[in-house]
Amino acid sequence: MKRIVFVCHGNICRSPMAEFIMKDIVWNGDKEAEYEITSKAATKDALGLEMDTRAKRVLEKHHVPFGTHHASLLQKEDYQKYDYLVGMDEENFFDMNRITGGDPEKKETKLLNFVSSWSDIEDPWYTGDFEKAYQEIQKGCKGLFEKLENKSI
Figure 1: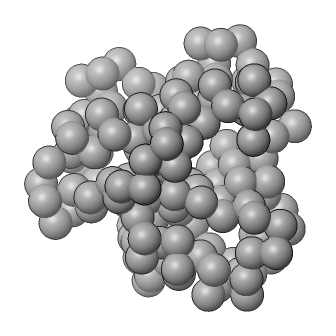
Figure 2 (figure 1 turned 90 degrees about the horizontal axis):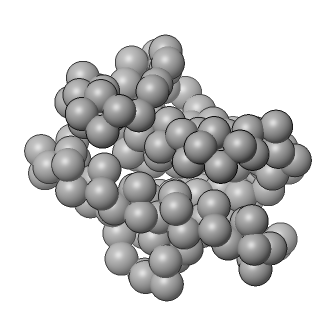
């Protein structure tokens, strides 16, 4: 079982989009029994908020199914629960490391690292560009899936 948690600032845009995009990729690859995927992890206080309506719209546009989502905070114990803690930008990466108390097992990374990029996925809450965020998240999730399936991580 591969356990993945996606992390972003408020857990209402990028990380839930990544959760549902990754679930769709895994489902289409007929591998859903081999994965546990969630995005229950904000690095800042956004507790209880639903996924942003604009994020839902872009997922619908691309025919990515999604379910109910309510923001929650990343917890220190999540480090032991998940194999991969995947943030969207440099700030998320540093916040994950602060919350979990370090990364001795090298489980924490940024999503676009899976496509050999150190770039950040900009927060569409601020940019308003949910389509660009979708495209980057999809690219990163495909890269993550390919690397996990090829066992090259």
